[in-house]
Length: 118
Image (cartoon, rainbow, N blue to C red; front, side, top):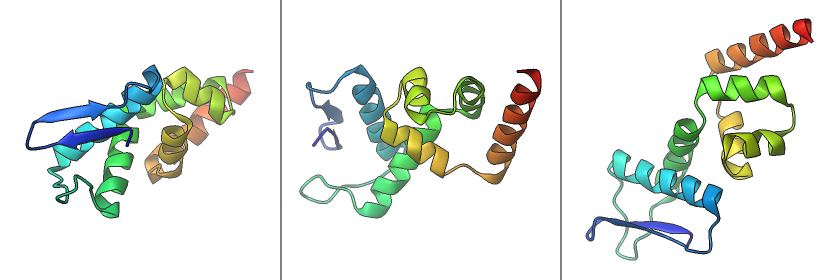
């Protein structure tokens, strides 16, 4: 367990061994559970559907479109992009993999404008 929302106690527990970026991402994930009204099982686990929804919501909150476009103008390297945005590689990959159509268009247009200028 890297982090957990304990509803009854109204507290989020985060593994002290996580680095700053991992803590940030874990906290965003647990807040997404709270905002979605997710309820855990008696063993404090969420089902896969809830986990996926929390992952996606956290990634969207941590990486807004404006920031994604800005970093996309700087680099094509996903590791560099994740570092620049202060998110884990997993969060970066998830955000890139769940782009909506208008977001994809915005990124393509930003890249095209960048290549013309460069």
